Amino acid sequence: MTSQIAEDSADRRVRKSKKALKETLLTLMREREFKRISITDLVHGADLNRGTFYKHYRDKEELLAEIVDDTMTDLVSSYREPYLHTDSFVLQELTSSAIKIFEHVHRHAAFYTLIVKSQALPGFPDRICSVFKQLSLSDLESSISNPQVDRELYASYQAYAIWGMILAWIEGGLVHSPDYMATQLLAVIRNRSSRQEVIYRSSSQDKKSDSLQP
Image 1 (cartoon, rainbow, N blue to C red):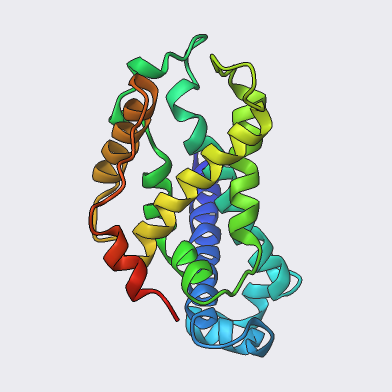
Image 2: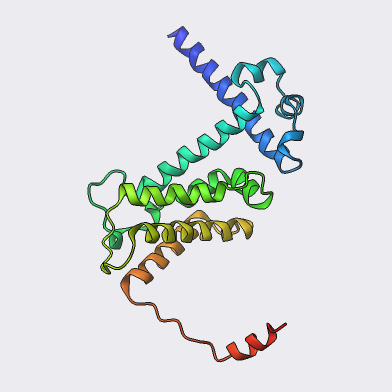
């Protein structure tokens, strides 16, 4: 029992140290380029010593890689949550409470705000969309009624649509709650699946077009 308590205590210290280093790195990356961040900066910001850093990581690149890996693992888990415990996934029966992707973004808000507002990890948004697309293709059988629709292109469309909502949410300062965002995504899904969407040309379009002329 005593050894188990000591082991649990050590695990908590490791998690606490790693969390402090990860939070410090994300904070520093909002202030300066990654290449300008030193190990000294990291340990000072996390209130740790260099020995503790090197006990867990070879270098700052490995620390950043673990942040990315942790985020991607949680992203996949959150995306799969609505259908993780069922053999059949009926879109019409989906509830907003089952949608966890926005809770994931909120949980990793510092990371997502960094990649959106500082461009610290160029290309990462495309990686996220690629994950969404591959999950859709590998996990779900889409019942597309139109045989002319290319399934891969449709999966890409869905992936970038979800990322578009996430992007707008982040750029807006995450003012809405994850529950609100999930409700909005579900409303969009149901609107597009329940009927043909008709887009009307606004009567003010001519005036707007004139104002856009060079």
